[in-house]
Each structure stands twice: as structure tokens, then as C-alpha cells.
Length: 439
Image (cartoon, rainbow, N blue to C red; front, side):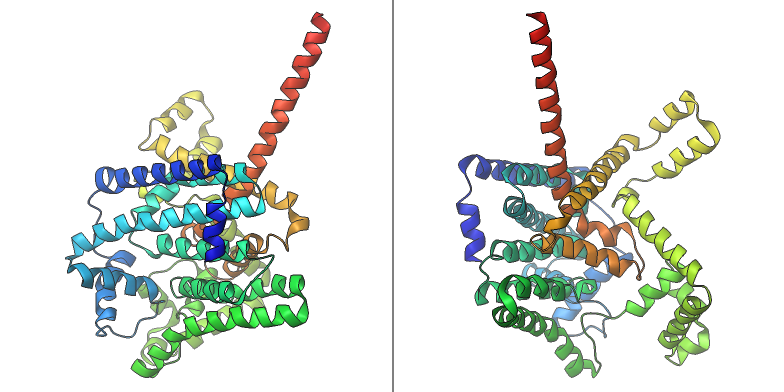
């Protein structure tokens, strides 16, 4: 961690002030959202109700066997135990504490921007995340994403600042942070294996192999704590979490409620505990007998998840995307377009779409531009490509792809500054030609 703190201390005064301003702005906007604009969200049902109920039970070791990764549950349970909070107060406390994880994310993204691009890109990325309503709304969700992105990007930033001269201590802490991220969202279980490739490539097989072993060992020991707990407490084997088969099955049949999924698996199979085998067989049948259909389903699901901004469902009313699609196919009049702008929460939804597509389109341009430096930018390319690959098989939702947004913001920030510099040069060049002609 010393290298990370050193990188922050050694920032030029202007860049350090920009980071401080971005953090202050982020804190103020998130406090405004949590305490004023949305002070009383629902506490029951869904993932939030599950976390608020099972977190305290897990900490007191009285919960039933849980299929999910434990870190967020333990986090919720510890907060409840420390302050003895009722569910409503616990929810508010978790939402306020989410601000700290977003501050950690902003600092980590700034460090990554400075390390791989320059101070200007780092500043743009930090500012965008600070004011982006997608991230602000996420602060108010008592779910895993805020903690996950904070811990994950802190691990990526630590890896990045030590990438040229990795040390055993930095890799141990990186492995610990990535392990905690996996025990928050188990979908990243195999991602650290990607990071050992540049270690070996940049340091040779002998030294790089030792460094890779240190990283993997620290990571594996962290993840194994949940495995050991389940083996001792429940005599069952689990690495990270359960549910991969279920999410792969929903990748074929679409998002289903537990009741719907059990009905499709068959009542007898569920009662006999064979539902996982049935779902695997259904996936295999689709792959062997309807491969083109399967590939079409997965491509459509993944592309739709990337094209849909995260947190648009926070705003009630008709889907903005659906309204625009309907207008394009049936109306195409100015009056119809004006009616869309008068819909509920139109401008809020539009802001989410603008910032998301700015990051997505210009971010992809940046990814293409830097493709020859993929090994240098391994933490960024690696996580984005890994997440895309995993959700090309597992069910893809905007929520599941949300953690790649900061990476897209970094590449989009670089592309934006490149375009602005090009425009400035064009204007200056035209102005020079005009002055010569006038003379």
C-alpha cells in the first residue's frame, strides 16, 4: 500500500487539488441524494431485504446455509452489531457508508488514470464518476456493487502502481483485496489468473513465476476462508458462491424467479435435489441441438445489457428506450418527439443514457487505440474482457456489467481529450489561415 500512498503524495499540487475537489463534490452529491432526495427507500424484499436479514444472522452464526458470497453480508451484520440498529436505521447507515466506497473508487480510478494515461485523463475520469447519476444512484442501493467496485479498483490500482517493480508485500495485499472482491461478487473468481500473465511476461518465468505464486497464494487463502467455514459448519463444498449453473441456465431461458425456474426444472427434480443436473442437461441439449439459437440468445442478451445504462429502473414510468423505439417505428413526428420529452423523469433518464453512451462509444474507441499496449494495461483490459467473456455465458444484466463502467470512463476520457485537442488545433489552424488572408 505504501506505493499507492506514495503515488498520491507525489501528485503535482494541481492534480492533487483536482482529486480533492472531485471527492468533495462526490460526497456532497451523494449525501444530497441519500439524505434529501431519496431518504426512505423500501427495506423489505429482494436482495436488499435478504442482505438486511441474513447479514446479522451470519455474523451471529445462526443463518441457514447461504448460496452467496459472504463479505457484504458480514459487512452489514457487523454494522448492525456495532450500532444495534433496526432495519430502517441499518439501511440508512449502509447507504451513507457506501459513500466511503465511492470515494475509494474515485481515488483508485484517478491513480489508474495517472498511471496508464496522464493527469488530465485521471482528472476527467474522477470528475465524471463524481457527478454521474448512475454512480450517485448506486450509492443509495444497499447492495454489493458499491463495496465491490471500491475494493476491486483499489486492488487494481495497487497492482498498477507496482506493475514495473512488483514486490511480495504489494502482491499479497493485492491478492487479499481481490479475494475480498471475489467474496463480495464471486463472478470474478478466475480473474486474478489473468493478472499473473503480465507478471510472467514482464519479469520472466523464474522471477515472474514466484511473484505469480505469491499473488495466487494470497488470493486463494482469502477465498478459502468461506470454503473452510462451509465445510466445517455445513459439511458442504463451496468456492466463492453457488449459482453458476443457474445463471448459465438463465442465460439460455432468460431471467426467471426461483418459482419459475423450479417449475421449468420439474417438481420431482427439485424435491429430489436433482434440479442442477436437470438444468445442466437442458443447457447441453440447447448447445448440441440449437447452437445458432443459443449464440443468438447470448449475443442479444449481452449486447442489450451493455446498451442499457445501469440504474434506469430507479426512475418509474415507461422505458425511454422503448418509447424512442416506438416513435421511430410508428410516429416519427415532432409532436411525438416532444411528447416523449414530457414523460416522467425524461431528463433524468436522458442524463443516464448520455453519460453511459459517452463512456461506451468513446471508451471502445480508446480500447481500440491502445490495443497494442494491452499487456501494459492488463488490469483494465483484463477485467473488462474477463467480465464480457463470463457474461457471454452467464446471464447478463446492466447491474452485472456496471463494474466495467469506470474502465470505459477512463478510455473515454482519453478519447475525449484527444478529440478536444484535435478540434482546438483545427480552430487555431483555420484562424491562422483567416488572419493571413485578411493581411
